[in-house]
Image (cartoon, rainbow, N blue to C red; front, side):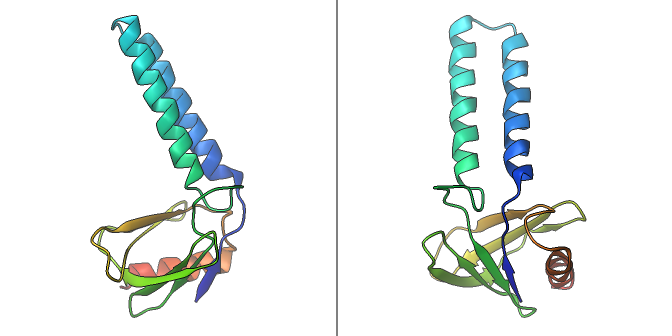
Length: 136
């Protein structure tokens, strides 16, 4: 089963809301101004890095498609169109509002994570992904 990701503003809105909330907490924290500036700058940099990893953003490094089999085999298409194969890893999460796919490419030492929110794929494809991940 192949899931072609569609553009959705929800992931970007989530990253922006979380960054804004963090900046609000930093602004109200009673620490020296220099520490708040450093923490705020770090928060903005992390938020920009996270946004660049989201699927289908212009110039983003996020995946374009996900191929998933019931046997646990995974293939992910990069923004340049290259497919990378691997296996599902432990630690994924399945809910109606969020799917987290953890996988490890063949020959890699670290797991990768793909977040899939509603709107990033059609409803039937998301249902199939949730079923495969729950029963694996």
